[in-house]
Length: 215
Image (tube, rainbow, N blue to C red; front, side, top):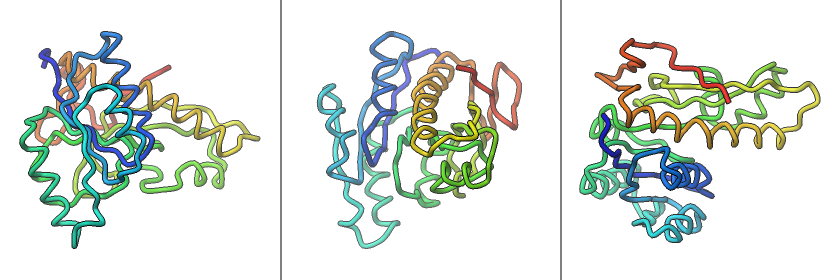
């Protein structure tokens, strides 16, 4: 791609992944412009982060809409005006409907705190500990119409200690997230990763399982 990426970031909470992307832009590693930050939660600290950095931001409260489809239509309307390369889901705690996904083919990225396809959905850290898994991780994937089921772009693993507590695991995973999301965006910008017809191409080779990243 090589030109600067233009991004829309959607979030619902504290916005630490947004901050990691902002930091990567500021230190010159990621060549990108964040055109807009949107939250469905007016109290999301991620909106405050956007304000502090002078980024365009707004809350579109899902509770003000009668159903998911109506809400998604509003999102589509606003994001379409920004003409972004990618829509980056950074802790956006809503499932986007089929119409939204179809409007932005090959453009919606999500980060998920598990080694997909293992543990889609919520409570991934708890499931890892309950099942005594020896490793855990983070996956960045393209969003399709299923739940955390789109093609995998990249992932990173950590070992799970026998006596590990859930909060310790969460902190480990956050560190990986803050590394891998900006890294993958940077590689998309540089053309090392490309997305073609819902397939992931890494270094000119189609890759079904995504690229493993090491911290």
